[in-house]
Image (tube, rainbow, N blue to C red; front, side, top):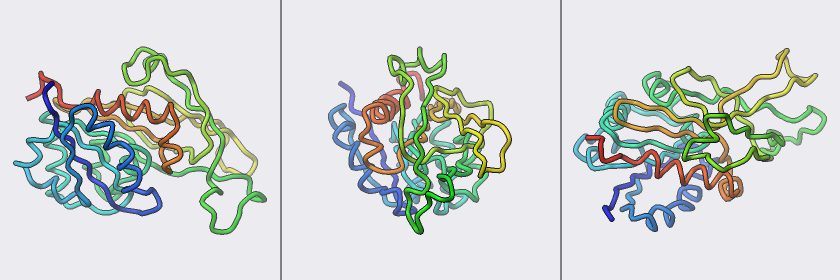
Length: 237
């Protein structure tokens, strides 16, 4: 079996557990014959020679900042065939000030609606934990990342995502109308999507706020399949 090179880039806001969450997937990568390198910042993205050797990037960097050279290096690597994947804020809420990054990924976290105001507890992250459904789309039911997975329920942050139509949506989630919210009709957001960029493949999975959600069988299956699917293919140069 040909060994692939996986680059884990992690950091940013500690509330998304970038170290603990990425460590969950290293055994899977190694079991599938990936040589795994871990970096604690996006600095390596600016190293064109290093990036040319990477077959898959697993990114977990919430918010934070990225330089022009770093984001241009990331874009060039993906366009040349390097796969990019991640979950939750580690990919869908990274580098908010970089329009070049947002265009690459195709979707950006906007908010996660909270519980009814009388249920809110001061300072608790569980204020934003809602029970919701991840609905597999028709495309998702035949895509190798989500094939065979039925609609499933989670209780965690439900991401409202701003996105463009260059993404291929494998699953959605719908935010209902509630009396305490200002919107007037249900809003459907992509929950799992792919994106083709040059010779590269991108996979974004929005569930994954905490390690317990990443251990959910459906979430973990989607992320692991997404890693395999996004990895540089033999046809990519």
